[in-house]
Image: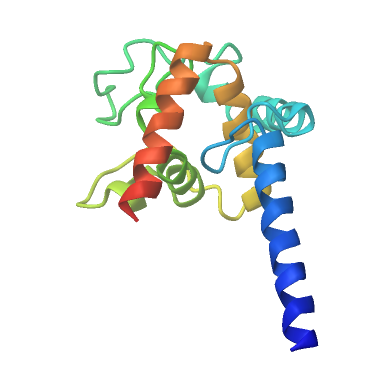
Length: 155
C-alpha cells in the first residue's frame, strides 16, 4: 500500500511537471522549434552552408520555381511566405529533407535536391527547418501549427 501511494505521488508529479513544461514551451506544436533562439541560430548557419546555394540566402528560391527547368527538374522553391514549404506539416518537411523529395514523392519523381540523411543529423535537420519557420510571419506560423495539430489528431 505504502509503495503504491509513493508511486502514485511520483506519477502525479511527473504529469504535473510535463504539463507545466508544455505550457512554458509556448504551446509548441510539432517537431520544429522556431522560438528556440539556439536552435534557430544553429539552423541559420546550417541553412547557409547547405541550402542557400539553391534556395537562396534570402529563402526566395530559384526563378520560375513552379515550372520545370531545361533539365526537366523543378527549380528549388522559396522557403519564405511566397513558397509552399509552410503548406506541409513538420513530419513531411523533415522526411523531404532527410530522405529527399524523390524518395518521399515516389512514382519515379526526380529532383535535384539530395537526401540529407548522410549529411545532417536529425537534430540539424530540425534546426534548419526551425530557422526557416522562424522567418515566417506569425499568421503563417499559426496556420502551419494547425497543420501539425491536425496531423497529430489523425494519428
